[in-house]
Image (cartoon, rainbow, N blue to C red):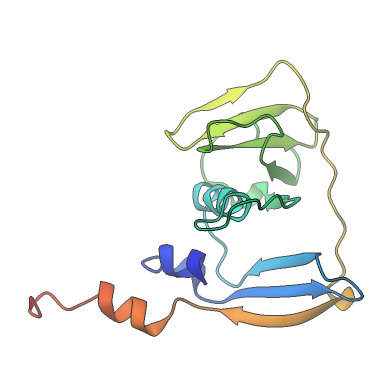
Amino acid sequence: MNLANLYASTEFVRGIELFRKKGSTDSFLILFTNTPDIERFNYFVNYIEYPIGLENHSPFTRGFYRTDQIDEDYDFKIGDWIMVFISKTDKEYDNVHITNSSNRNYVFDFGGSVKALDSIEEKFELIATDIENYNHIIDIHPSEDFEQKNHKAWWKFW
């Protein structure tokens, strides 16, 4: 819910679907009804890894994004999918790592730069998911209270 509230001004967080893998208590799948652009998708992966207000939280987070939905001409835009993750050695908290199907690794920082890495931290592995193996838990939307507080009409200045 915090993620949806944080990005309530965008359409991307309206209808986030949360699923839990059948027979598991700690394996989840998140799907976006409204596909975010690559920059916001990267923010979302980063947020799941470093959620506000949760300490001692260390999930295994992988995001997969179709390259045909990326408008910009990034060097990492090779193959059908890219894998987005947080580096095990990350100390800056304001970037994600990207691996493409050619196993080239990149750092995408939230200041707008993309840097190719000389080494491979992780090889590309598209994690196959069959929605039939997951139970739908909830559809997440920004809370109405949050939206109303933050989207007052211009004439309501009090």
